[in-house]
Image (cartoon, rainbow, N blue to C red; front, side, top):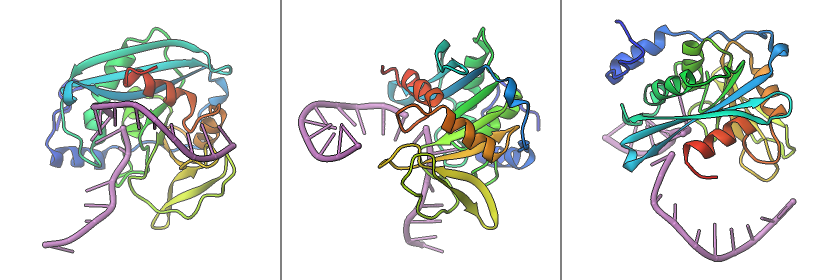
Length: 220
DNA sequence: GCGACAG
DNA sequence: ATCTTGTCGC
């Protein structure tokens, strides 16, 4: 099967087949000490879902000041199918990234990384295509199990699937539902959690994802 | 067959 | 995801 970047319209069967052949690299670290720009990505929808709107915000590290932000709109390609989210969102996200003048060194994505039935959530898929370290930051669970998360900000518990740890359930803010953090590509879970915590300011979501979320939903 | 199910 | 006002709490 050949998959062009611009022909992402696959049948669910082909999409699942492709996922089983793609393997993100979960590594101990990747010279993350040289990071000076972090991006957040999110996708929103307009006109009853007919239009897909991809937003990327690039922040400076450290400092978290906004350096650049772009939006790309295009006709929606696929419906939402749990487990196949990346085929709906990644093409538009790639177009948005191509508009950037300041390429990031690390990317936070709204959705799962390897915390996915076939270990290829949207963050992993996007990381493979961009060849950049990515982190999945999801607001709810797709798969896996975990116990109660302690109440202190920064506390986290592993997300288990069988005997495998596929992510972290992180208390990013007190008295608020925890978020699901997982490696997307080219970093490990500990490093992923570390970066998310470092990018927390005073809200449930880390700055990169929070700002991309607002831009994609054309709020703020 | 019956739920669960990122965004 | 999106449709939507006020309201409870730190």
